[in-house]
Image (cartoon, rainbow, N blue to C red; front, side, top):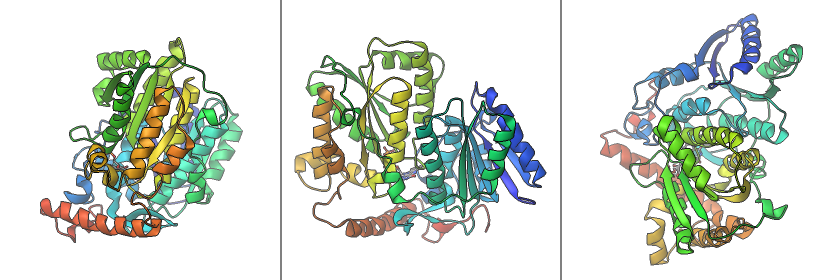
Length: 456
Ligand SMILES: Cc1cc2nc3c(=O)[nH]c(=O)nc-3n(C[C@H](O)[C@H](O)[C@H](O)COP(=O)(O)O)c2cc1C
């Protein structure tokens, strides 16, 4: 790695000091290889989190509208030869510190779509991207979470056109010579890209498909946590989750809904948030897919909830259901994020009731909203509505998501249309939509292609 420019994103959070010896060995290895290393200790850097406004595509193309340290880090990343993500493995994903900066990577690609390794992804904005290396640390071995972590790094590498990538999960308690060997290997290894088949296979089944769900008295109390940062306007997550919650309410459940905001996860806000969590029998997560995983505030809320639940035993196990929606037309991109939710359920002794993956979320939910479509009784959301109805009926009985619902939801939203045609239509319409959005901001079609960080 001699003369290579390396950016090291240190994703340790508060209480992760025990991971320092591995980080020091990594630094040592990098220095002795002759690389120039720029380290970002993320928890000490003040920056905003992505609010999902897409201004970085259609208002200030290539630049986040927030002129803070996040911009500098993203610039350093795209100008590096290798970017390393150093993080505790968090339910199979990254720490919230990594997620905060990673959600801000989207200006590095163009809004337009392309077919890349057989799936829809974004077109590159720059001609060169860094190699991606993920180093995840576990305190106890957990093969399932280690596998999710490795796939996640690979999926990010695909999404961001990395020329190569490698991922390694290291045990914090391992002997230092073994840690060093693992680090030496991962720094030079090239792992195979995890394409469609790999991520599809991660779609987590509900527990009832492998074991009986414990009985619960229904109706109970349900809490919807909407994980989209788009809280000013109604998000697809809010529409999808709200639809299920309303059906539970109609079946006699007590319901509560909250959108995640930063203040909820600290101080007094956090205490209130955790009381609401404690009172719920059933928790529903509804969130958008952000960079192949859960958005920053969702990851932060999982960390906060897990810490609380491990210290406060619950009378009866809570149930968890999750609905993820994404921007690309293929629903399977969400499988990894849903598998992370399942690991969270396992780690916190919740009963996993299953998940639903919704492709092309913005298009199918917001043009017009679900309820409007239901009344008009027309596509494209017909199968989706059926799926949500089936799910709501099962959840109301304390039961898990029937596989039929997940299959219906994954169907092409326009009945009888071949997926390839739907995908072509989607890519074409999106191109037009982004240009229309840019024109409203007086941004021309050519300006959308700006490379504010230079022709790297
Ligand atoms: C920061 C960011 C990252 C995203 N990453 C992905 C991604 O990796 N894959 C994908 O299919 N869509 C991705 N999307 C698109 C969102 O998942 C999509 O727009 C979703 O419908 C938004 O849902 P919401 O209205 O509930 O926020 C991303 C969007 C943003 C803002």
